[in-house]
Image (cartoon, rainbow, N blue to C red; front, side):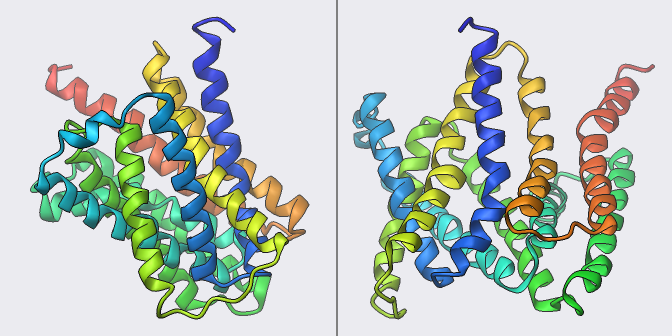
Length: 302
């Protein structure tokens, strides 16, 4: 495998992994509670990142961290994996997968709003159009949900949007730590603290005796939602000479996810879901690439 092909293969592996997890969430919810899913998945991801720390010989980096950095990772671990995945899995418990999955993709819009409000980084006017398009997609998906389940769960929609809020918050905190540790070390520390919180939570939240099917479902989520794809995607970005291509591949994930939802879960994909997803992703792509070019052109006086 040559140096140009390897990043694309790694990126494709990450995208394919993320494309299957919406289906995996619904399957796991048949045999275990939301907290049990988070517990097993977090333990699995932590095991993967522990192996990665060993393979990359990164343990020494932990000794150089300040008490302040450890404290910030303690906060990050509470935001995600714990709070984020509890809210996200709960959304899937209330909603059909084809509704919950696209709504979570609104997190870049929420991130922009958070940065504008708390980070004093105003949203460029050129990006308002893309944000409106994505929000119209949200309306399409929400209204179309009534044709799937009779009446779409308002609580489920709130939870799905809440998960997007938590994921945006995670990236704000994570971005503030990017100069202090490597990506792999950051993931290990985040899930280390996440596992600590899960262990504490298990003292108060009842957990049943899980069968093999439940354990394997939770482990799959930990491996292919939380663990392996982040490593693959990180490697792809670091080794490619075309990072834009790797990032663009991620926009295939929600559409591939609908395919797995249809085939495995046998959900009849509503036309409004497809239209809504196209609008959400279209708005994000517009803001990421086309609005950015317009802004660059203005700055250059073109």
